[in-house]
Image 1 (cartoon, rainbow, N blue to C red):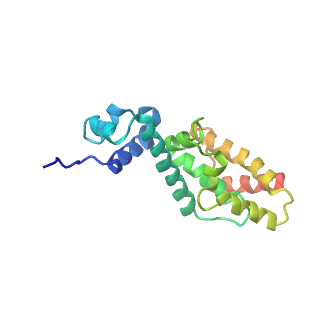
Image 2 (cartoon, rainbow, N blue to C red):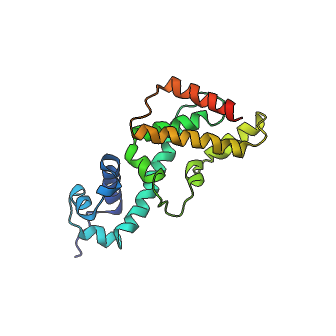
Length: 181
């Protein structure tokens, strides 16, 4: 009778995501993952050909966590890009290591930054459409200006240089929208 496999891909991905969230991607190594999943490295390399294959799947898990965060984030205003910006900044503040893995590395596993932010639900597309319906002549250009501002704020939160309260963030995002419009 064949031995039952107790370490599954789901167990490894859950453990890898927990490590990513707690310690950052640099700490997700085969030995450390094996320790976290309470196994040897053998099941890791039975399931994955190499660590890069695991990182590719981990990237998708991390991206899904970002999309879930954005989808559950309460919309605070009808002004385009403000709530999406709040969610992006909030994700960086709450999950700094996951944010770094997704948005502050060169490796995006075949995905563009735009596709990652837009997500399966079309978050950016909706915001661009809303800006257009509110009279913005070049909503795509407006998005780029807003996103530079939003991404800068999110990145600043990782270094402790961004400590604004939610109300102040909303006010600044609204002001930036009006200035860029």
